[in-house]
Amino acid sequence: MAMQTLTNRSKVVSNKKMTLWEKIYLPAIVKGLSITFFGHFFKRKVTFSYPDKQREFSPVYRGRHVLKRDDQGRERCTACGLCALACPAEAITIVAAERKPGEENLYREEKYAATYEINMLRCIFCGLCEEVCPKEAIFLTDQIVHSEYERPTFIYGKDKLVESVDNPVDVSKRQTKSVLEFKKNTGFAHNR
Ligand code: SF4
Ligand code: SF4
Image 1 (cartoon, rainbow, N blue to C red):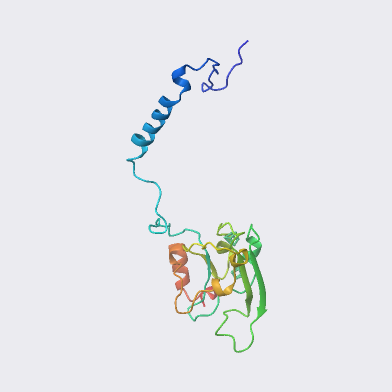
Image 2 (image 1 turned 135 degrees about the vertical axis):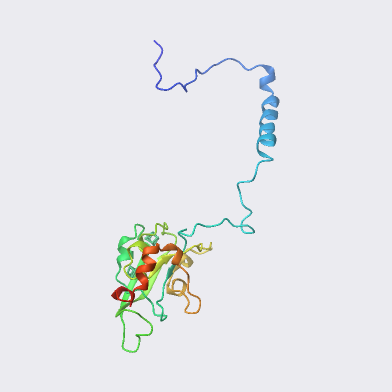
């Protein structure tokens, strides 16, 4: 009894012998080349000649991270460790330190990250660190992580992650209108 099939896509395999015409394969090769030439050669290319041309990234593209400073140039991160805890790839390492008198212009909070490292080989750019941060200290950006030859160079420390005082990274496109409105209100301790 023939087996009942679940779909109508099954085909009965035929063991019929190939003819001489089929054995020389030339017609099949010509047919394949004609599909390549007429079917694909004149179509618009789907590939880009990177790096000469680059695709436009989404405003919320999740690329390499930035550690933000506040309006006065102080590091926002307070080394609470929530980002490291939330990170599914265990890519973040933080060593906390107490702010010393006289360092108020460097660090916004009494505790700061003396060491903050992200292993870019582990990171899956999920954005959970950005979402969980209570201090708006870490954001992902539209910048890509460059290729390197040595594995240790993929461990980004504060030298690579903290934004420059003179050249802050604009992350406003990553925040909703309501968040931007909320941040304008200096009545909230969060914004002071
Ligand atoms: S983007 Fe995701 S994987 Fe990468 S460091 Fe942040 S939480 Fe970890
Ligand atoms: S980046 Fe944000 S979540 Fe991570 S340790 Fe700093 S303040 Fe906490």
